[in-house]
Image (cartoon, rainbow, N blue to C red; front, side, top):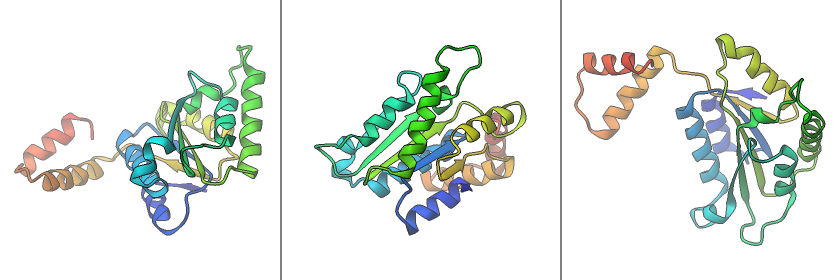
Length: 191
């Protein structure tokens, strides 16, 4: 199921998080909101230090991450394994690592069918945007991780969405900015 960040946040309030999620897109604000909500939903404050594990697929194989997800923790009954650089696991045509990468995809598909209880595997593929030149690359990532049941797209903000968010953040912070100043800020930051 492909959903946006808002849909994902709403689903977290209504149901247990899925065993695995893929976060696609280069928009860091929305991705951070989803990451924080997932961690808060699954791990109580006292379990976060032991229950949260971070991996980077530029430093570790996908099979290694799956092995970690399958291993039991002595310190926390629930775990969130946040995996960044998920696009690094994609097979490369000219690389000799293709077999290991295909093995990782097979391990992931097997894991999805029989996940470890209390473990949520969250893969972040934030190198590519969802539009323009990156669209085909993002589709390749989506296809590679097609076994993951929940895929969350984190697209960039439109100018109007950026203005609305900036207005809300300014209001929350108790700052006084005129509409023109806020619009200039949004424009100068590229929404």
